[in-house]
Amino acid sequence: MVTGAMRRWRIRRLYNGEEFARARRLSERELGGYNHDFATDIIVRSLYNEGRWKALLDFVEQHPAAVHEVYAKKAQRRLSQALEEAEGIPEPNEKKPWNIADLLSNWSQEGRRLWLRHPWGWTHWDMPEEYSLKDTHPALLHLALEVLLFPWVPETKRWDVERRSPGTNHSLSYSGGVDSTAAMLLLPDDTILAYHERNFTSMLNHSLPHSTFEAIEERTGRRVLRVPSNHEKIRTYHGLQTGFPTANAACVHLILLADHLDICSISFGTVIENTWLKKGLKFREFQDTHYWNYWPKQFKKAGLDYALPINHISEAGALKICAQSELADVVNSCLRGNGDRWCGTCWKCFHKNGPLGRDIDPTSKEISIFLNKKPLRTAQHALWALKVQSLEHLTPHLAEHIADDLSWWDKAYEPGLDLIEEPLRSVVKEKTDTYLEWMTKPYALVEVDLDV
Ligand SMILES: [Zn+2]
Image (cartoon, rainbow, N blue to C red):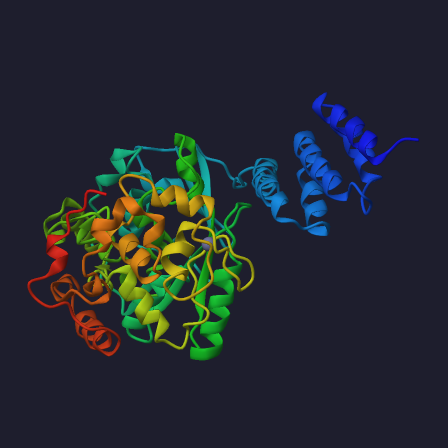
């Protein structure tokens, strides 16, 4: 008689001999029986080794268990990569070569799709109906080229065309996350909200922002304009991961739409960690940085005010604003969540969802890795997040910093208002007053110089 133990031994031998398909088929017969757990484990590992990502995900869905999660996650990533590769990168019907002598000739439009020829291929945006490239001011097109390409094509920084005169509407580059929602809440209620939407297969999930947008529309009557594009691919030609080619590329959809939407300012949800603090670690006089003395001037040439309506607020302040708003239950910065549920295991969940009182697993692999990195990412905020969640025990190496009084961290830094031009400054100041306290002098912020 062949016992369960003998059958297990036979399966294990096949598996160790890398005969994955055979090991898997024998294991399938053991499902529901004495060797059930052993069999599911062999099936998951075999499917992984066979590269059958979709079958693995289906199997784990039918047989959910914590031990399979790590394989399911890896399979999901591999599947997305494979889909992305199979999908290819779209190209226009009319193909022209990249022209560095006449930069603006690299733009073209076919139907609602706006194309940009760049040195390595094409990228596109799917614009609202009635958008017209012809009616878009050359200064806007130059500025868009610069924010997309300047690290690799320095020629895009040199442009001198007639200034565009400002439009009448304020706009915000909106992501649906905590910081940009706080910015939305401090800006005038008629500010245009526009979301850059990745339109290719990737690990990022749009479903959380989408449920936030639906709630915004239901509760406030405001619409979020979504602009699909694949411009985050540009940096992948330079060995970098998919993402914004430069920080200001986050608003390129608004630059391109500035005439169509009659825009006079573009706002970003940039917090203290990226303005008054350098890498979230050390105080700097932000108004003296090259960044601040360069970009607002470039935007001005295109008739746009470069606005940082939450430069005077930390991530903690942004969380506090959102928590007091009618959107408290729907705002979420997690990019790995599903539907209206966050993942609970990523760094964003640790420092945004955790302090909001949402369930997270602070011992997850990603969170542990980040907490033990040196320098600590968004350090000042991370220290505060550890303290308010009473998680000091996870980071004995940071104990001396967490012992400090950090209660000033969710208050607003008044000198930051000077960076915001009127008429936005007064609106932002008044709205800040309704949500937050102001930091008091001498400012603890100015003393921040962390070596963690
Ligand atoms: Zn998450």
